Image (cartoon, rainbow, N blue to C red; front, side):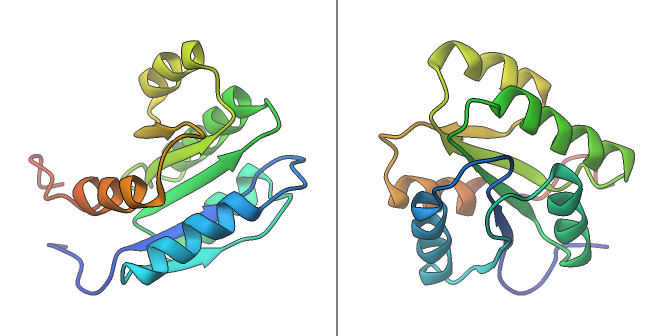
Length: 140
């Protein structure tokens, strides 16, 4: 397949029951302003809907914003679905109200990065630029 041309494509999603999407919208806008293509799925998406969207849109990454406390379940569900559909090359990152002690297990599970509430949009944009679509050593 080689290196994908064009801008990095990121699906930004709010899984679960969160009613607030200001943070997700701020991130979506920042990524867009940085020249990326952002597909914003809106509120109350199931992991299945998010993964469907990411695959249909040929996304490079999925950014999940989770404030509800269900991050362990929701991140795991998205990562498991990506594996099931052989789409685990889609990077999963996220942010929200996530306790420090939950971050290492999430990363072990396959979440590429977690941004806590103090993270700046600039730091998130930089991270996506540096980590999404890096040439994989395996060449798969």
